[in-house]
Image (tube, rainbow, N blue to C red; front, side):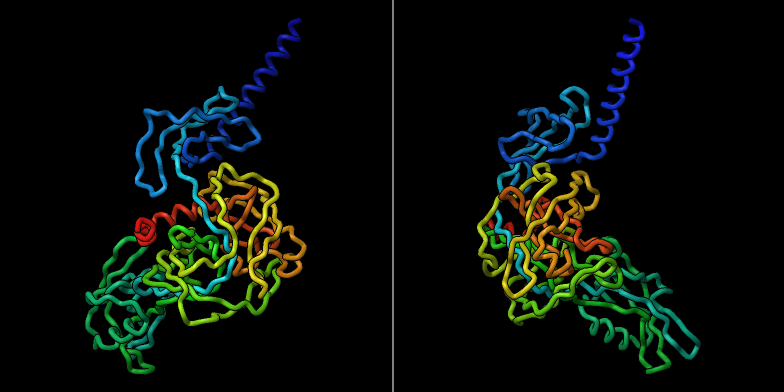
Length: 412
């Protein structure tokens, strides 16, 4: 009898420790914030039973978010007993968006000019580096020189050449913080011109995929990740941007170790939309018209997404957007990376035959599951082009709704 009691006690102790461990694990893997549709409660899809308390009436507060209704704290518990954590739940209205999967060209002009390289200048006194000497770093954004706003490479070069070697006041942005420094140009012994020892970039252009179009506001979101400088990896600071039509004319298939690519060219110089934000979660703005013939679908919240079958809508040839099968292999609800929330695997034989999997240019292709938009393709695994990352659509929608130009258009 004592053996049975000891055995039972051991089993109970093991179960208690396992449950505690599971609660600790869920505390780290579940986020501190969720959205739920107005009037609904939070339901989390996990292999373990996680329950949440009702949204408390006395804990509700109005929010400034455009589509927000109210918010409050709820308690998450394992099996309805073991506390996991307290999380913030914000009610939102249902958003309906048109999934696109259409290719587009983007032209960005930067806010200021980005320093993409620093180099020595040959002078009569030997090699000198004025930029390095005054603390300028790769990735800095030059906003003004001697109080004059600059936005092109030519403006920077002209001001430096006209300095006659006098000290120049540079205003910079570094990681979002204002920095001021004084640079003294030197005469280059090769061409006799005054130089600062910096390489700068003022624009960027590329091809991607439009994720969604909002038929109510004419707003769009695309790419699922920001446009970064190829040399520094920093997000390009946006001054202005345009969307233009694109003609696809070829595919480089992806292989292990070598990402593939959609080849295309701008089909027109006439803009069909404007870019209002180049953000971590994508590029956003407004379009002159709906680029897709798809019907509007509801937006899924992250806790509604499940592992398993799904589809993507993408364009890889002249036949326009088509739907292809994929699987959602992994979901990271509490991902610290805003654009790598899901692992997606391409399973469609036709798409695999055409592209080898995910290729450059497919970023932004919307992911559909159970009749809802759940996210967009963002990255490919270099060593396995059939797999890649996806972003939660709610992350893109939140950025889109935060744009003042779009809010103004929506309110009109």
